[in-house]
Amino acid sequence: MALLSFLGAIQEVTGSCYLVETRDGSRVLLECGMRQGGRREEEEVNARPFPFDPGSLDAVVISHAHIDHSGLLPRLAAAGYRGPIFATEATCELMNLMLLDAAHLQENDAAWENKWRARLGKPPVQPLYTTADAEKALSLCRPQPYGAALEVAPGVIVTFHPAGHILGSAIVEMELHDHHLTRRLVFSGDLGNTCTPLMRDPTPLSRADVVLLESTYGDRNHRNSEETLEEFAEILQKAHRDGGNVLIPSFAVGRTQDLLFYLGRFYQEGRLPQQAVFLDSPMAIRANAIYARFAEEFDPLDRDLLRAKGVKRAEDWLPVLRMTPTPEESMAINRIKSGAIIIAGSGMCTGGRIVHHFKHNLWRQECHLVFPGFQAQGTLGRRIVDGAGSVKVLHQRIAVRAQVHTLGGFSAHAGQSQLIDWVQHFDHHPELYLVHGEREKMLVLQQTLHERLNWTATIPERGEQIAI
Image (tube, rainbow, N blue to C red; front, side):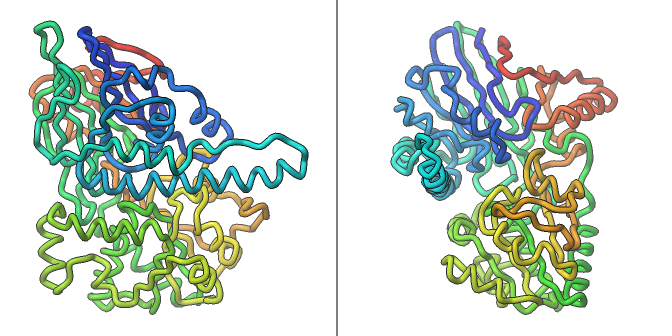
């Protein structure tokens, strides 16, 4: 029988990684994600040698471009991997954007650290990986269309299905032919919230022997999307009355495009009081262009709505949008004390331009800070959401006096009921394993699956290996 090893995103939400090995000798890595959170522990784990020989792999399969699913591909290539990397066409384009950006950040962080280390007489550190490593990994990418079965290694056939999470995101169906035995492994990837704009709903599948199910929001359902939109509109109105700015930390790929779609909708309805929306993220600006190229993959209703307005891109129906790709344009935003909506990365406030805007706005009680998505444990965003009175930003401690809002209804992840609705489409109860979620949320989902479907779900341990 084939073997499956659980190597990452096990009882946590980052660092997705699983190894599939057949008795005939095929070895396929499913995901190669970076652990995120900004803590020393994550940095140390990311820098450790892989728990397998990269050169022995036949193929790598990636569900989508987010760094917690693809971010260690440059390290894999640097460590000797030379085989193909399979992903959807849009995912390959987005990885080209995100991995090069990640490498640039790694190099800059190492250079900054080494300035201080040199003054202290300490030896220099090396970046986790370099731009050359990222380029080497990207040269191995082999884009694939949705719905096409492909033999990625002897006896291992992979089909990608729309997951509805971000552009190009996929549910991975893996058919394993091993010593005349056929087994089917399905990895949900990150399943999308069915209310997410632009994206199609996750594809229901009916056949599987083993299912790996993400559980980011396994403990709860998201708020109704229309109620969330109303709350968002009210926050914008209140910020306008208070005379402050609105800060929105946002992931460059996925969440930002959703926000621009919603803000454009408010503008078209005459419900956007702010006269300036700044997209202060070079990566998000480039991601918008990729989204525009793949507009045919959008949900048909949203695509038709945009076309009815005479635009091809969601941001085009938001005339007050201003894009600020250069550092000088970004710094100029900080001269604006009121009336601006500032969308900037990173989504969990672990770096990026949003922390610079915190320096100028977080301590002002007339300002509003809106978190439109999940904040992982250990991140700056999570500390603020949990009620910290002050936080350390750019080596300075700053009071948190801005009004803080969380809008869970904007999540690009499926909520609990959506997860259960997707998994119950399988014809019979497969072996079900919960991954990509914090343990307490997994426990709630595990219990709910038992109560609603009478299904048993297993929560694996890191490094655990099972027979498929």
